[in-house]
Amino acid sequence: MRGFIQWLLARRYRSVILAAAFAPVPLISFASTALMTLETLYRGGQQGLISAVVATGGVLGLAWVWGADSSNFGLAGAAILFSGVGLGVLLRWAGTLALAFQGVVLVCAGGALLSGLLWPDPGVLIASIVEQGIDWLRSTGAAEEQIQAVTEGWERLFIGFLILGVFLQLMVPLLLGSWWASLMNPQPQFGSQFRELRLGRFLGIPGTLLMAISLVLGGSVIQNLFPLALFGFWFQGIAIVHAWGRARQWNSAIVAAMYVLLLPPFTGMTVLALASVGLVDNWVDLRAPLRVKA
Image (cartoon, rainbow, N blue to C red; front, side, top):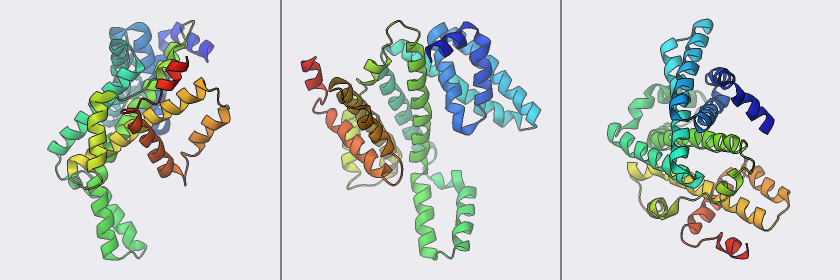
């Protein structure tokens, strides 16, 4: 992988072409964001912006070739590419992966709060989707009470899961771009920094309160922020498992089993278990014994 990254960064056009090609493809668009993060970390914020502008031009060129709507194509591509530049600037400013992680969580939390103010009734945003869903449910013979319950759930949880999607779309490139950039150093620091990933008390305290309040209360603010808090603690829980595995020299199959258990039908249980570990770590430093031993 190091050889590939060195080849990629040797000529700027290589990463720009790949980023433009990946951006329109939903399942791998995160790779475009990660490439712009890498470019920004390696060349600096100004040069990262130039790369993103050129790559956006490439996306518009693809839209013209495919006969797609260039405005929608361009906006989506620009969001994917320029968010990578933002992540790179954030990492350069923060200095550590943990602080950059906290910055992403904070930005997404602000987006959730702002979305709640701008769209107090999220149903208007997904009216056409809800109508299609209602038609499909009726075609399956579902009762009207069931249809109403499902559609109310969609409307109630839409913003929360939208913010979660944005969070994951930023976190995956943040980790990937940081890892790629670290490969350019003689002694890569990505692993050690990832194992120290944490929300910290500044975000951990409100996150813990949110998780506790959600057990007894609802409300749009809680529903919008709950998925973000859950997966913020989830990332921290994963980092703790990796930290213990590295320090105690666990068999790699043990850590691999954690990722296997994230697949259905164990997904919900595993996410909750890892998030619980991350939540506890904000109050009882679960990695402290590892540092003492070291």
